Length: 242
Image (cartoon, rainbow, N blue to C red; front, side, top):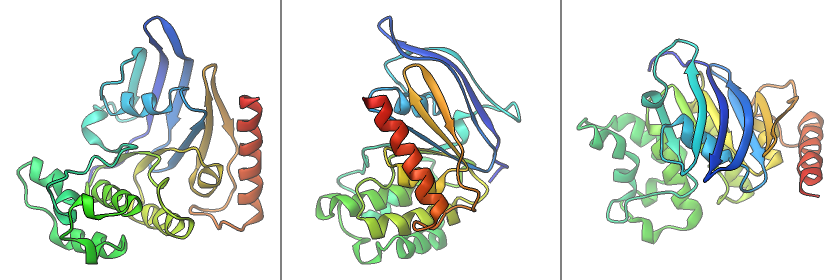
């Protein structure tokens, strides 16, 4: 894996002449986790898709740059809100899809490790239709973790998981993505408080930065700093919705 760069998105977006989000500057620090929260429809997923150079349906006026000056999109692994699993492929083939599309042999040792760590070994030969929603999301996460990319974009990656599994998968993601530049879109203040080295709340008017706890990620759920940050984020989101 090449060294993870910092990334900056600077600009604004509109849909059919209607402003989606106002001019903003979002900086992702190299090798760190950035969490982006906000109400539905403010453009969080659009920001992710712009970074990944994927269609958005929006007109973007701005630029996306990396600190090393190299192109961004080709160095990204992206996990969408929908799991996008191939219905005819088994769990292990879905996880190893990236290598297959590139005409490469999958890293079998990494695949086995992810199957075990994500609790999917007993499901490895099942098709997506045989899995629960949470199991499908774990497969999608494992497929993203399988990619050896320096920039990782995650759109609600843990939303379909129960609380215990969610915390375990957050811990695993932090471990396996060490040194990567990671951005997570989430609606969960508690998740942002656990994972964010930087936390931003997005509205149509722009971004509000929220100071994260000082502890290393992933932070303890029960830690006072984590709970205080979670509370502050929830109040901010509720105030915007009022």
